[in-house]
Image (tube, rainbow, N blue to C red; front, side, top):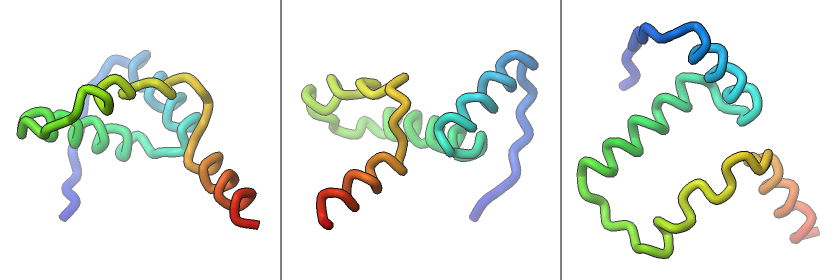
Length: 78
């Protein structure tokens, strides 16, 4: 079930979130949901191997998104 949540944030932070949203192709709501899911996973002590942990954030700022992955698959399986 989805529930509405109102957040009060600094105008600059909202503008930055909207910019990141447009660049990533995800809605601001999805970005917030992803962040909350990460917090939830950390709170539950999810076992993440050191190798996987070392990969966290490695693609940040790369400009890659899900459409790049789909394009890769299309080219690979032609």
